[in-house]
Image 1 (spheres, rainbow, N blue to C red):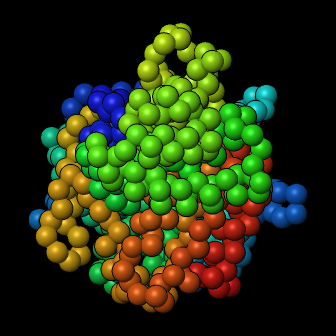
Image 2 (cartoon, helix red, strand yellow):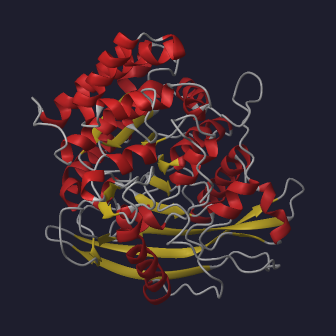
Length: 510
């Protein structure tokens, strides 16, 4: 993982981005093979399956394979690995929707959404307050009854590779990445014959930024997108600009929700919903005003704001004041349960784990990572080889952020205006896509316990599309008692699936 240089929320953007790869890039990383040249070809492993659920039976075809990506001159340059699921027990319908899924990072493969969310089979893992063992089996929450499903791995992850490793840089950047996904989706539509199908995008974490850039690119190419599901969003890196305070404001409501979960504050009227409502008001009001004063804040104002911060989070007034009202993510994770000798998770703050150093300033690891990473990696490798019969003879790269982030081009060319630097903002891309297609609808799903992509920051971005008042009814937001990877908790899956199904009813009416 990249070095975390922040002391009090004044950190470089790479601190935050490294955390967007599920479980960083530590426990779940498969090291890439040495530089090599691969044959320019597309391959497929096709298998037939029947999914038997309590109230339904679905026959489907699974295709694991690669899509060829080409340089502008036409020569093959890379392959993108995908797994597609198509329902086969109904008359072929060219208008059946197809949904393209991708995780984020940059540097993460899409096994998390593939195995954990809405594919035909799902990995169930114990929630933070549960015991038990992981189990992989038929998924009662699958979206296969509503849409064909395609899970795509970014170049440099999964089985996606450049044909010559020296060409990796051509795919490792905000714009380069979005271009490669646009090309891969176009190629898949040709290979599968689904050009007439309604198309949806489903991105998680950095995948939401990719979705915003990608939607605008696809619309510009004449490929209409009916809907975008954004899970745990990051759309504007400027929230984390050094010297600004937006990240502190974004995080405070999530800190409050976490404190309530762990019993660090008394029961709150209205529960987590009531608490986060009041925390939003404070964070965007008197707290933001106090931060804006910087060194000019009076002692009385400092104490008043620190006291309110304490009431919402349980952190001591002295600790909050010593941090100049700005509590970094790892500082909060370490301080909240310090008296128990524990820290809380980053991707899911409900998780807690033991710390060896009782006076450490920051959490030394992510308990969520430690408890969840291995089951996904092990299950994915078994599933692809033994169930889908795809064995390419190269390692499946789960996460490789060390290499990819170090070479990533963080700049971005928005649809209008000058090229942005490393603090890229994809909100204009999403706004442009929504202007291009007045029918495009957005669903944003968020966890109360996610400090990596806090929901209050997402609310800010989606309120600043500047796409006109008619845009607002086309955006739906939902919140769940879960973390960054919402689907980790079995208990929220019925409601999450219900909400996404309702969104499909709006975006792609039956």
